[in-house]
Image 1 (tube, protein in one colour):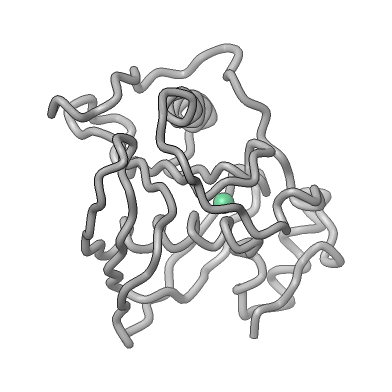
Image 2 (cartoon, helix red, strand yellow):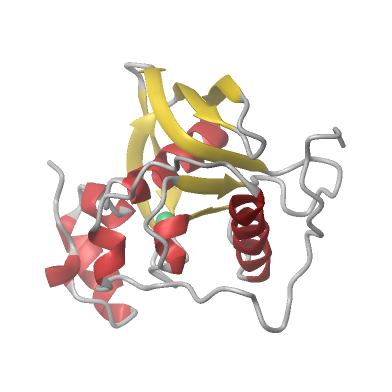
Length: 188
Ligand SMILES: [Zn+2]
């Protein structure tokens, strides 16, 4: 672990600190505001988001999902590995992404139970501020690229179901888990 990593135990809490909003909630559809001050309050939010994510067995979480319309996302594709620190991205911006799209199954803590394939770039380069306000530029591939792009979508008010191409499967999955197709906003 590096000195700049926030100490968060990767454990499931009986009572996660934050409530997760579900599809149909307004805040999930609002574009999130840029963070202007990276301070202890923001780091506390990131810790609570991580605790909530680990408790709910997610691998990514965006602030709008916990009702906070700010450009903050947390990601950890290795929640069972205590040695790998989670990622905290503040004000992330896509610098470039691969033309190549790959299909992969996605789920979302805000649409529990629903898992469907979505096409995403295989690789993405993102600039962002870390939890200490330091500018970072990183290239992500495969699952990490997918999760980062999924979480960044949340900051624009976009949900993964908006990108699902198979409408029939989408309608079936949503109704099975008591969500409404009327809450989906197709992006293509
Ligand atoms: Zn999500």
